[in-house]
Length: 274
Image 1 (cartoon, helix red, strand yellow):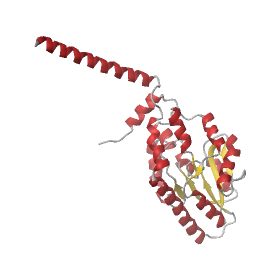
Image 2 (cartoon, rainbow, N blue to C red; image 1 turned 60 degrees about the vertical axis):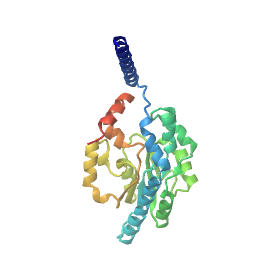
Image 3 (tube, rainbow, N blue to C red; image 1 turned 90 degrees about the vertical axis):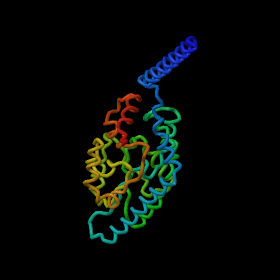
Image 4 (cartoon, rainbow, N blue to C red; image 1 turned 180 degrees about the horizontal axis):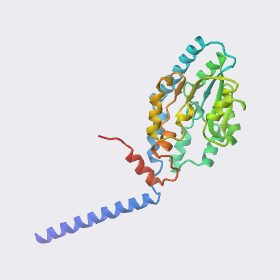
């Protein structure tokens, strides 16, 4: 009997040591950056690519935009400037979820080289409802300006992708990409010199106003509250769970140097439970 008890204790001790070693091994690998650093985004990409709810939300956004546009034009008073809509491109009128899927497949973070590779494919599809809305806006005499943080060297393939899909005003004059800064206020001001901006569309709050630039989550949330009457009226927001300032400036606190292990820890720490 004593021998059996001793053997059982030995097995349990070995099992505990083995578990401890595996756990420490796992932590060690994570600290070295060997975690699956894109694993966390799988559900977001799956949702955008497969859920009917995503389509419903984009249709809802563009239906709202058309209703508001009609209302604005009905009540518009005379203006010396022609009317314009300013819109973002990525995840607002072009779907780049295949690029995010590629990052998951290769377990790699964003890289300029890979992003340019995807852009050169010219395969981004239109966000549901986008093409119909922008064509409608043109038919009502409204110009479209596309302000995007795609790199300026991507301009040719970006315009060609948009032209292939049939987006109006897909030309050098109306597509304003990033040059020296990712902040969009100066490019919006450039449009305002010659046009009256009556509506803005985007998937990121910085697409609408400079007060959201480089701000942490709490500040972004407070600013949304203070501007709540603009959303669904002049500001039309498209859903994007895959990436954005909500993560980089918000969750990850504007720090681009976290290791994959640190990012994973930060994401977990920001979850609110009960």
